[in-house]
Every structure is written in structure tokens, then in C-alpha cells.
Length: 396
Ligand code: SAH
Ligand code: SF4
Image (tube, rainbow, N blue to C red):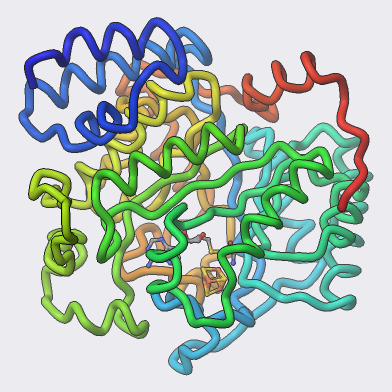
């Protein structure tokens, strides 16, 4: 790319300094020296805003009961090949104690989607107990899908500070190919707005390497993140799961590591060949982290477990590409097999102590340190709250 140095200098100097074409061109980089330059620029921006420091969130997979049927996900309602579970309040509180003991500073409660008064009350009760138990010092993040504004408000008041809800893709037409007609892009968007109005730090993201996705679409996703002013990002590879409609169409043994959206993409009128994704899922996911860092500068960006599925050091590569958050699993090993969103999930039998030890060592190896015992709020959120005053906590 002729003007790469120029583009990277501009992107490093200020956020939101690139055009959609430039974003797409950066995402499409594949030559090793160009990818190295991209990552070095993203790493410089990350270092300036958050240092060479990793924030950890202990991930509690709280249940795999889901009312939805997303075509890509292994715990979708239509998958009859898994037993369903929901952790009890005591089990979740024990996991929260583990997170405190392991000094992670922050916890993510994630599960399939259930919308009911019983479930809302259950989570509310759990949150109140965690807040009481930890004196409010543990940063609690929820990732429990689409809910009513009232539910979001109740959970926020009970002590949750952050919420993760990926848009999956910001292209409504692509979204429609990934979900049954009953799943609404419009509602997901409304939920993201309502979370923001409730005063959460809001995180979103997309899957990379989806069938039918191209670099322009991913570039628009980054524009969408900026427009929505998210505080946190979680972008990672799409990885097929054998018991899903999307996974079933890719039956090759090597599908996990070699699959990319390219094979399924038909060229649309007016589209140039160069925007079709032919990268490995690992490369496109790492490029996405770097380009998002260069465009948004001060948000928290997660290096997801799905990256570790593609390469043993995938998450460390994510940190070096510009990410600053890792979510080690703290779920009891007896439940992990039943929470497989995609095939090849790592660490199914490793207990949380083993995971912690290995992660601390690998982070030290790349020359970074861990933000122990700190919630690790997004610097973007801190600035946003400072400049706009505290949000009112009112929901639509
Ligand atoms: N039910 C909640 C939270 C659990 S799913 C929700 O959907 O928001 C969390 C994330 O897992 C989803 O947002 C999706 O991006 C990701 N996911 C699901 N199936 C996946 C797959 N096959 N490959 C990669 N990521 C997947
Ligand atoms: Fe359910 Fe979330 Fe999986 Fe969709 S992605 S099926 S909402 S757990």
C-alpha cells in the first residue's frame, strides 16, 4: 500500500481520522511488513491511553438456557444435543468470591437470553448480594442479551456497571441472514441505546469472517462503533459450531482454523474483488482489533477466548494488536462443555487456578503487566462521564 505510512501517522495522531475507504484498506492488509506496521501503530495508541497493562474480567457462564435461535451459536434454542443448565445463586456467589480471591477486580456474568420477571428478579437478587459481599468494589458486567429498559434499569440499580451486547454486524441485511426473522436488528439497536441511557458503560462488537461479510462491511462496523460512542469493544472471529445451521454447511475437518467468509461471498454489483475477505479468521480478527484501536483510541478492547481457539497464543497476539482486556473463564469445569458457542473452545478441563497461572505467565512473556484488583474502567467512559456530567439513570 503506497500511502500506508501517511495513513498510520494520521490515525495515530488523532481518533476518527480515517475515511471508510482507508479503514477498509487497513483491514485488508495481509503483507507481513504492512501488518507489522499496522500493529505497531495500534500498539503505540493503546500504550498511550492504557499503558502496557491488561485488565482482567472473570467470566462466569451463568447458564445456557436461551430463547433465541441465532444460526451461528452452539447454545441456540434449536440445539437438542446439549443439556441445559442455570447456575444457582450460591454457585454464582461462589464464582464471585473466586474472582475476588484471584484478584481479577471485575466479573462478567454471561448467559443465553431469558426474558421473564422470575429471571429479572433472580439476577437482581444475585447483583444485590454481590454488591453487599464486595462493598461495590468489584466491577460487574452483564452479558444477558436483549431485555426491556425496565429490566436494564433494575439491574443497574442493583449494582451492575457495564453491559456487553454485540450488534454482531451493523449491516441489517447481513444481520438478517444470521438470524431467524423473529430476531430484530432494530430491537438490538434500541437495547444498546437504552443501556446507554441507563448509565451503563456499554460494550458491543461484531464477529469477523462471517459468510457474506467483506472489508467494507467491517469498516462500516467500526464507523458504527464510533457513532454509537461505545466504551468497550469485543470483536472476535466467527467460528463454526457443528450443531448449528451455519456450522453444518462447513463440514471440513479443518474448518475451524481455515474457514473464512470468502468462500460464501458472491460479488455484488459495483463491488471490487479486493474487498472480499480472503484472510484467515485469525488475521482478519487481529486486523479488526488494530484498526478499531486506531480509529477509536481510548476504548477498552477485549482479546477474546475465540482467538485462543485459533492459536494457542491468540489472545496475546490480540494484546499486541491493540487489545487491553482478557476475560479468563472462572466457570466450574463441570459446566463448561455445555457452554460451547463454537467448536474447539479451549480450557474445557482447566480449573480457574490453572487458567490464571498460565495467563499471568503468558502476559509477562509479552512484557505486559496485569491490573490486579482494579475494575479497569474504560478511559473513554471516564472522559464521557466527566464531560457530560453523570447520566440521570432514566430509561426509555
Ligand atoms: N446471549 C447473549 C450473550 C451470550 S452469546 C447475547 O447473545 O448477547 C455472546 C456472544 O457470543 C455473541 O454476542 C456472539 O457474538 C458470540 N458467538 C456466538 N456464537 C459464536 C460463534 N459460532 N463464533 C464466534 N462467536 C460466537
Ligand atoms: Fe442465545 Fe446469545 Fe447464542 Fe444468540 S448468541 S443463541 S442469544 S446465547
